[in-house]
Image 1 (cartoon, rainbow, N blue to C red):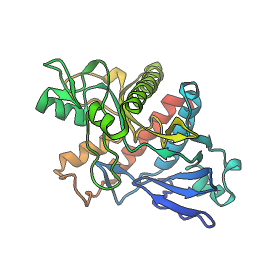
Image 2: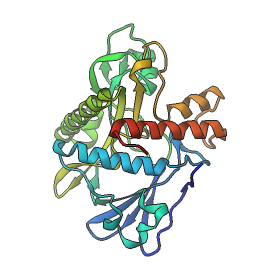
Image 3: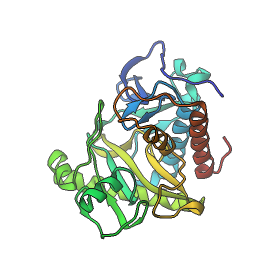
Image 4: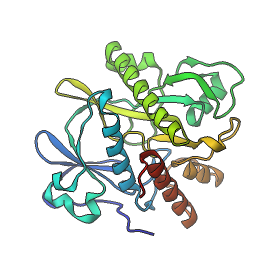
Length: 294
């Protein structure tokens, strides 16, 4: 396996936040450096074992999407070219995982769009017949395609679990106008991502976006349409009624669920084959979506 980066340390740059996967450094009063480590988070718990190349996949794929979706509104992306990064971040172990971005005032909500019934949406539907306030037709099966994509926001938790909320609850948190803009932008981005996925034989089942304000305009921030933030399925093997083969961390979720983990820290130890299989799925998603060899 290739080398991994579980935690970064950059001389000369001030670390201002260490998240579950990304670490944020101050560059100047308008710019930040995001470093995607190889840490894996599932069910909002960080595992002890990193996934080789994961951070580089997340950065390079997000870079590709930010460029591909540039016509759909502002983003925080500036560059991932090593020559544009602060000099201390140009080291080989950092450059491939680092992205220069503009500072933003973050909106504290996860903007989730679901085109198919999976994950926590499937669980909620089984209990209530609805997902985040969206009443759905009865009799839907796991992984069933929804009549149309639905916006299902959640809280943004730095520690512990994010919680699904209704659109009306989101409006209560951020205001009705902003909540509507978040929904419209998120669904536009989802549809564009789903079209590209379909072109390469993938299904974008669901994904999440984050937004913030830059110079008074709502902009996409963090990552975009990666295996960490999205659920990608192989279209050829897709069949509703089961959990389809995926190109994301569902592989890990399935393993830890099968061994009976209660989804609370500490996370269980991952076997070598699960680590290797997860890396392979991330790389495969990158190669198919971008059309470029890893």
